[in-house]
Image (cartoon, rainbow, N blue to C red; front, side, top):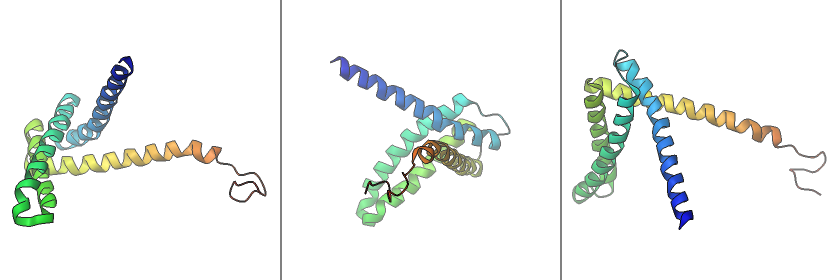
Length: 142
């Protein structure tokens, strides 16, 4: 029973950390497009509600569009869900549709750069520790 509570607490803690980390690129992008008016709390709200709205609209859209578009319904549902996400950004940051699109695109670019940097930093210990003894081929003793 205690293990279940510990596991649940770890999952909740991990979700909160991921939510905070994903909110940082949205915050930086919103700062750029709002003239500095964006706050981290606003970015966290936009990230939280944006994820919920996107998920619900994509799911409902895929179901509703299935009758008309078949397999393409998921793509169409995702497009409508992206527009709903832009609406959330537009509402939270009090900006226009084009600026909301800019926030979304810039947040993706910032997150990509962060992930590449984290990947490069995380791979350094792997490269340092990966040594092959001389004469052993690819690390397999002969």
